[in-house]
Length: 463
Image (cartoon, rainbow, N blue to C red; front, side, top):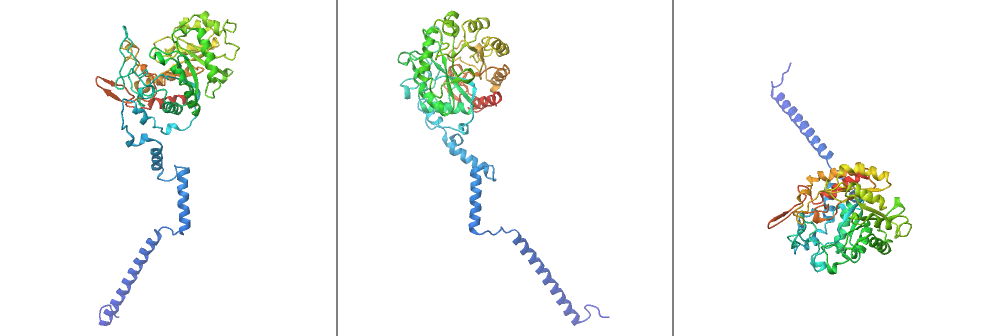
């Protein structure tokens, strides 16, 4: 029997065998490599079909930014084009006497500018009394005097103003339509559906506006109405106690307002109450019950009832028995509390709101409690520190809202959008430090924090 390797012939056969085996192994490895590479190649698509697929993908991004892994990037790019807040290069480059701030900041229309449904069960008090040299030829209200006796000095803007906070928009003018537009955008983003403008008559003014400033808060009303309409915001009036105001002059003012503005689409009329206008009367207790009754009673000698000027008129509730009696005997349609300082008055003390709401129901009266983010007015009233209410990073505001909603009122008011002197504003504030004083802001939260918090609570109150 032959064995391998016992002869030259067998050696040659042995070599040929191993050479064949090597060729088979190499061929197999090449086939495996070729298969794997072909398997992972992208599918070949004709050019016109590939182009169509790319177009479809782009269309999907435009219509639905949630499709595709690049959606977050696309959203950020879109937001940067729409919102200069996201662009670090949009930092203020000019600070010309505190007025150019508004030229930069008022351009900041973020995603909050999107149209949303506002609530006509929420009203905020709005103050159109500010002015600056650029627009008005002088400072107005930012230079508020210090309220001490004897009469104190006035603040000197732009660094020193009559407020503990400093507005993000700078020291703006209420006559500037760009400012009013930005304010309406901010309020709309928070779902605020009604603003109640501080109105001092068509020929009068508050103590900080004098001489030619008479009627200043009336002159801006047409512009406010027009811009408010764009954002579906309605406008009502906060009738302020100008010098010489009486119930009789109040009646004349109602006639003036309704005749002049009553047909404007943004003029608020309460549908649930026969489309009547709404007027808040600040310091209503300054006039007697009999004088108010003459105007508000059905059979009063100067009554507005049953006429084209018939309106919903609500009195300021400060004291318990006294102001409730005024509301009933004086024939007011309801009461509001205004003050943002919890515990300052009977009306502004939130633990009383449930009982006030019950009293209102029993007497067929409207009840409108006021919520606020805090209170601080020590720049203009250095003696009033006991009434300061810290914001507590929004907790104070949260607690006010909870109490108001639990009281089941007819409407909730916010004190305020922009009463900067008393530190009740929800309008954005910014950090600012000058020699000898550091203004408060909303840190660690963003400047728009209270706008966002307002929306959260309105969503809870009226989903």
